[in-house]
Length: 325
Image 1 (tube, one colour):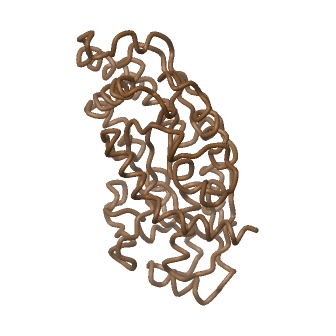
Image 2: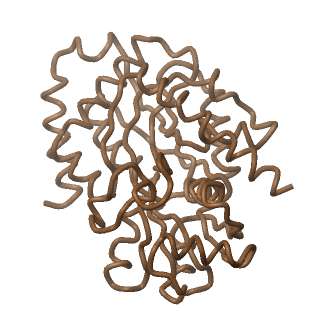
């Protein structure tokens, strides 16, 4: 079954699941909803947003319009969403950068993620994998750490940009492994990955779904999964936690937030519709194809999840902010 057909089939099921008028609070939504995405069209988060928008459009019976607002590590999107009316017609696809690390690494970002947003739900998580170009003379994570420690400032790692999940993963790894690697930022994960494959950059943390075929084809070597459990895309690759650092977790996550002040009734409608989408087997299969492990959470659970991330990532963000100045 194609992804497009799967989305249409899932949508019909969702209409039935949400068929009772009481499921949609009063007259909300009565017009299209805008979902602000902090990245360019075509990237992983944009693809996830477009899949969710199609399914949620069916569930909410209103179009969900994607608005790509890349730039400033997500701050442009975050500021726009924070300043939008709190009426449920503007949502933001949030992530670690926007909701956790940007305030720690920049003094003025135009919004306060802890005060300016209402959590709706954690959509899903995506495993990152530490990969190296095969020309790098290492076969294991331990060998790579020793290789980098012996060559301070000589090992390069790519990322999808300053503050991106791949950048944060690299900085967390540098801290834990006590290695001095040089950050090479790109604007999107694709070009960064291509330069690692070409050997222009030596290593990168990248989504498992993005690199699995390259690993199987021998174009990249996978050293470890930067998540609490192994990835279904590469089941034979152990985690960083198994191999070296207990508790190491650089998972990419995506969640929906609304402007602060959005009514509880509206948040409940959005949460209910999103939860129904995430429980649909076809939707799960589509997202799994993108390397996304469906999460789903209540607004309260997502709020607690965000708060628990702050003490881990804020020191990392502050450290690389100091290094860049």
